[in-house]
Length: 325
Image (cartoon, rainbow, N blue to C red; front, side, top):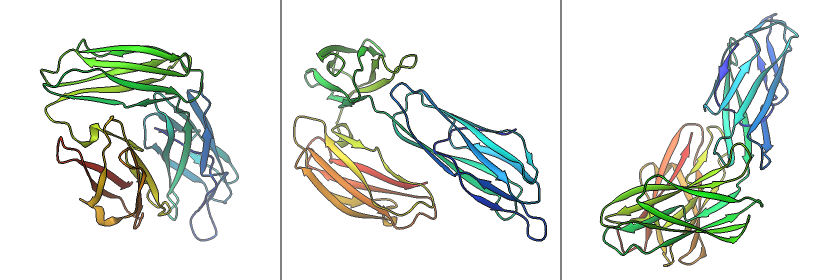
């Protein structure tokens, strides 16, 4: 019986053609991908990837391996005779994950022609809250003026039950704008005389038994650079190896009161493997979108781009990363 880590996705339909000659092995899968939209109170997703040996030769499953420890995957046994059915049972535990999650499970067999089958499990975990900004920053020596985190409930009702601090260097206060729907968290450091790297946790009451926790990073720095002033969604652009080379977009939102302009997108390390097709100004000084496309996806790639901004505090560069993995 084989174990594996994390899985996202669905059932599979894949034929594994076995040995040539009169005796052939052929694993036929119902489906190779499973997609699931989780409900607000779900904490796990379970799926069986079913198959059948449609050939006339035994197939041995040598290993089942996942790319994440958040999901287990297990085969019922090792060897499947001709005509025998089996399944890879998987359980994905969400933990604090939110949004679209995708994981692969590698099933290795003794078939010399197709020794590897990759199963994919995709789960869309509901985003209960939008917390913005999730980084608050002050410069060393500047007045410790309070800053406010806006908490909006996406799927009501969800209550903010507390805000936990990792130490006594941060003061916070929760203001209820509309119970179960919107909150404001007023935050300030006890002192800006020294550098600080701390965190707050916004604790909710949902789902019951495993409530979601949303971090807010608290920084006091000698100098503040671009990442402290922008919210990027997603954090980076990614494509799976072998996936269709299609455009994907990253959204950048200014999370400080003062408008900040993005003036240029400059290629950096590995950027030659990607195309920047568009820098879209959604709202000048407030919101931008950047669309990228990998030139190929047949091998692992990583490219970085520097976004020049009008920030006066530093050189104003913000790094955007694109990967094929």
